[in-house]
Image (tube, rainbow, N blue to C red; front, side):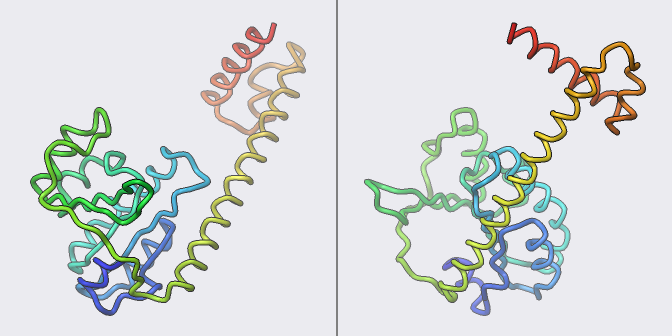
Length: 220
């Protein structure tokens, strides 16, 4: 946030966002040379799902970002999970923030060339050791925007994401239960009819059938 505010003193909580839809809206509404902070509020979803959403949102908005000359800051758990195209060619720098003996706010800065080298060398082991950073430092505990509003927005985003994940899990359990009931009909009903009853594709049906059969063998 401090870096974004340095680039754009007009930064407000409206341009600090937590979801792909909020990110797209902020990019579309932003004026030239303004900053947008995409704080993905990492929780509730798997790393793969979360990073997939971030990467898709970034790639889809690159043209608009470039046209408006925006300063976009993406907050994420790990640089190496960023889309390769964005990490190597569409980003200008990496600021790796870390803790030392439980003290927060230390950072290492990698410019565009060292960032590329780091991504290539470090991705295999998720290591930030090669090459060395251009320089290092530490952030002070200062919010350039209203901290209470920011924390409330982040809390609401986390709650919404957790609720969404809970709904996904419940739907999956119901779908699995329905699948087992349909499979229990046995040979009295053809697979084509079962597919129609479940309302899923043939490919999805046979994939689930294979997983179900393997699970039954393991439980015997």
